[in-house]
Image 1: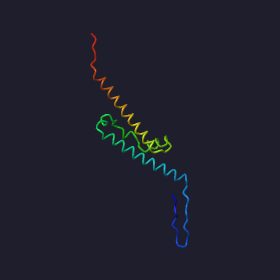
Image 2: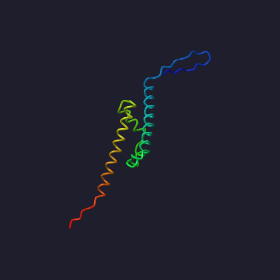
Image 3: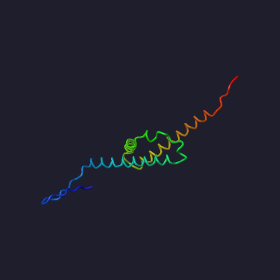
Image 4: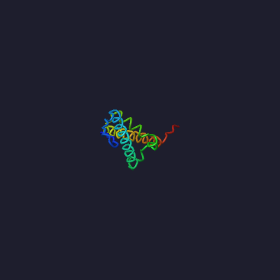
Length: 118
């Protein structure tokens, strides 16, 4: 992206070359924002699904700071957006399955009758 300085009367048009580090940093910030928004949308989707809702952790949204999570996933995948989204989805599914198994194991333990030995 080229930046053009608008000249005053009688001055020449000046092309300013953008700083590559600055443009890379802006691009990375934009990807973090995009992934954060995508993560929120995925989070909302899973909360709305009735099959998953009962196994969904109650404090998931408050537990995750989506911007820092997005930055973590992007840094882990060298700012590859698609890989970061897929990794987040797989981690979320793993966490949901783990919650489901924990709840199933605790409910099966509490449902068993205790044997009394005389």
